[in-house]
Length: 122
Image (cartoon, rainbow, N blue to C red):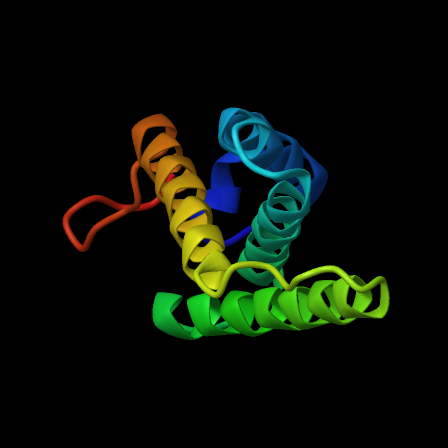
């Protein structure tokens, strides 16, 4: 496993941990925005598990998936004659996802610090 997932038993365990961290954030927002936050968090865990790329590129992939979710939600809302989501939803989702990923990285680094050039991997 790569990144923060190296300390979790499986991708499913990583998803569960991310959901636990995200729960208070998701609970505090509109259900549609909470759903987008949950989707972005799950995408971040899956990207961490499957994509060999620097963090910025991983964040970009998650951002693109989030934007697709926002576009779909807005299309559904429009078809129902409802107003679209606020324009800052993408930023709010990205901020919450960053908090969750940062927390998972901090947890991983506390539980099993990364090996450095001076510290051989176990």
